[in-house]
Length: 99
Image 1 (cartoon, rainbow, N blue to C red):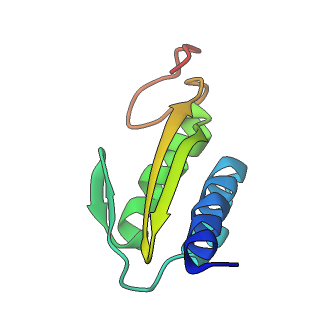
Image 2: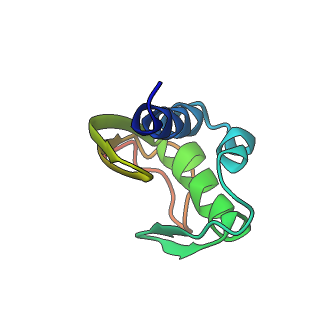
């Protein structure tokens, strides 16, 4: 398997773990000092874990890879996020609306 294919496989495992709500598997894919960037904030895993938990448990967030491109150690992913607001999250009560 090429370096690019190996790196794309890591991104696929990340998406699979996120969709299962397996935060330990997500953490295992990151280096200890990895900084995660996102709309809700950024930081090391311990800082973003509660955000991810609310996205997964509150919104039932699921990721679907649309495009995945790799060159050397760089991987670019375009994915769609979907879910239904089904449990309290970020101080708001669920609406049962799809996102």
